[in-house]
Image 1 (spheres, one colour):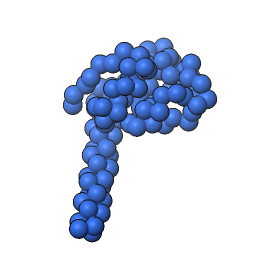
Image 2 (cartoon, rainbow, N blue to C red):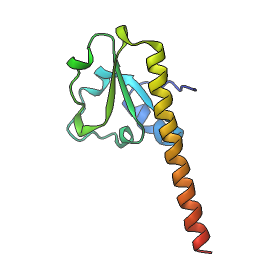
Image 3 (cartoon, rainbow, N blue to C red):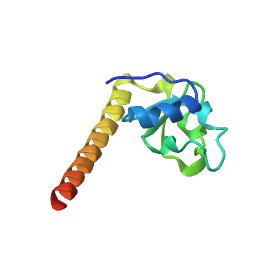
Length: 112
């Protein structure tokens, strides 16, 4: 699995559409000041994992804008659990991509 470091939501807003990652991992605190309708539409393009060193999942509140988020409390997160979750999300992303390619191929062959 490859990783691309990006600093800040503004940079992520530019990079995510270009890179099309399978998953985005960020600090939970970075997401908390978001308004009810976040200006960063790219947050909806990939599954989001919010991690924290200080807040347990029970202390993490829903992120504004109803962005789907998985929460990781790093002091108790086992590396095998994180890897399992990341690979499961990446596999789902690959299935969606194959479905998109298949649908596109079917549409283009019907229009010929």
